[in-house]
Image (cartoon, rainbow, N blue to C red; front, side):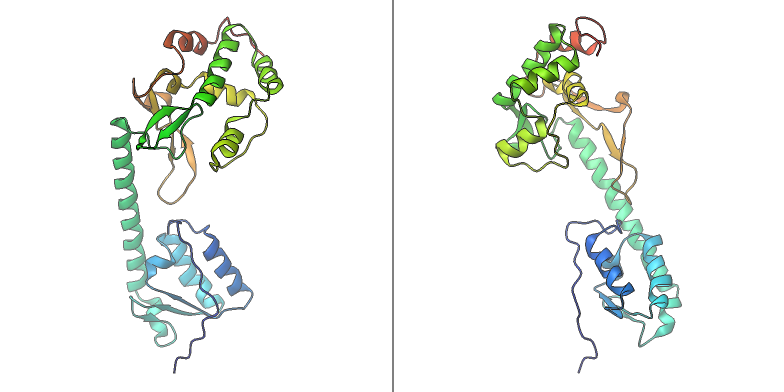
Length: 268
């Protein structure tokens, strides 16, 4: 008869093992601290995580502090049956190998994505405002007429000499939805941040985006490392730009005239 009673399953589907800010892991840790559970079972050490420092912290500090029984099935680890195994070199060595595997996989994935971008494939989850992903090929962009008309309106207002604040007022007076609200209401597309009101940052994102003259611009941001989701901005010279990859919404001469920080665009 088993001496183990399962209290709860903690699952983190869709999260990388290098990230310990996972909801399932955090819930488990919280239940440990509240004394709701006195043991943890994982399929193998990589299921606990692929971050050498964080896994090491759990094994070397959390387990002894709360007197947990730790079982890793595939690694034949059971701290109750063999307490000495937790102090052996085997566990930290496996942790190091798990992180190394994750780092190598992440590097290969980034290299593959970069190569795909250079080949002219659109990799983003959501198409830039004014475009949609081609339903027949998600790596290509097609014009979204309704949003494209709004993009044209913004450029034309700028060319006429309207300041950004004047453009924002015009968009608001005409009840034109912001890109994030438009995507959500028109297509049910979930975006990370909903902005109800137009602002100068949104306008800059449109007026300076080469996507609208048919160029595919990617690689503007990158992850700091395989251990974190934090993104940093990439220098403009290192952006991946492939020209003439989809139908342009704005003529190049109009875009170039606007991109220069000089008349006919007024300063705010």
